[in-house]
Amino acid sequence: MTHAAITGWGKCLPPATLTNADLATIIDTNDDWIVQRTGIRERRITHVPAVQLTHVAAQRALACAGIEAGQLDLIVYGSCSADEAVPNTASGLQVLLGAKRAAAYDINTACTSFLYGLSTATALIKTGVVRTALVVGVEYISQYMDWSNRNVAVLFGDGAAAVVLQASDREEGLIGEALGCIADARQTLRVRGMGAVYGNRDVMLGDTQWDFDGQEIFKRAVHGMSEASNTVLAKCGKTIADIDLLVPHQANLRIIEAVGKRIGASMDRTFLTVHKYGNMSAATVPVALVEAIEAGRVQPGNLLLMPAFGAGLTLCSHLVRWGERVTPIATSDAELPPFEGTALDLVGALRAKKEPAGRSAAGSLPSPLASSLMVPVLPR
Image (cartoon, rainbow, N blue to C red; front, side, top):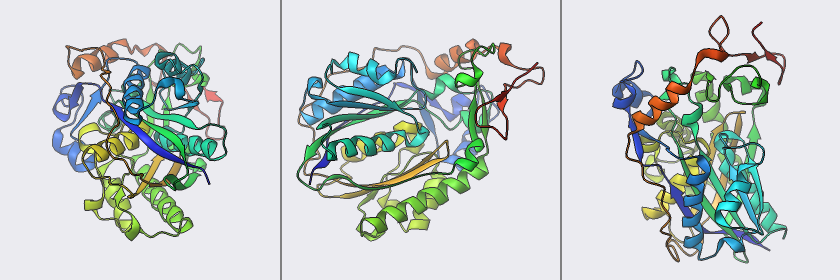
């Protein structure tokens, strides 16, 4: 039987760090308030488009696997903040890499996008459609952030990571997954201002408002990630005792702790990056995976459990058997262009671009009807 081994990995974090103290200078918040509720102390803000982050991460992953971009059969670009919708951003990454023979598509399931991409790429390798694939998770959330809303502005950051998958006769890579979606609660996390329903309504790029029911999201995230984890373990004939490391979506430390408690995974077997990067949506799991490998927390033959939850409300949990190698075959000298400013400079520029032209008299952007998936209520 053919399997899809993970043979390369790489990440790219922008250099500009936005601390909780920085945020306190622009919104009504403080370090204690943020840390107690989320466990987040800082996050990154990018000075380049998201595809440039993925370009660097991908070059590092390819070098790690010891292959050239021309050997790729497929590129899967996981993100909910893609630089372009038409043409897709995956094709832009194909051009930057020079991966001329690779098929390329975007996938958007919000925070679960990388893991859903891992599922689809693995399935295509197992069925013989492709033999070598690149799967990336990347977000440029800062571009679409409502920087006046402290409930969401403190949570999110930018970043990217990528993995290379190659056909293998050994049982390694993704060995099982559980996927789901709680669509009847999709309205609990909506970014108004992103999407075609807001087009031609005098809404500027990045002029967003977030519908974010924190308590409901917390409850459903804990339940969804826990149930998906228990499902995939049972499906694969494993128990939580068989898991060497939990690499969860890094949305909120309190969610991670609650999921670990529900499924019986101790925090000493859980890898965390949420404190230093915040919620990077589709990038959180692959960045955490790369850092876990770099920290020596992933060893040959280990079983990794990777649950996630995102807008939609999508959910999943993936069980990965690691292969024999935990060190790169080679390294890449790819780097982002230098940036001399600060994260506050970048946020200030983003805030300055957001004019209230798209706001209604009531001060809000149009919102889709409660009874409809697509049709917006627009100001007259």
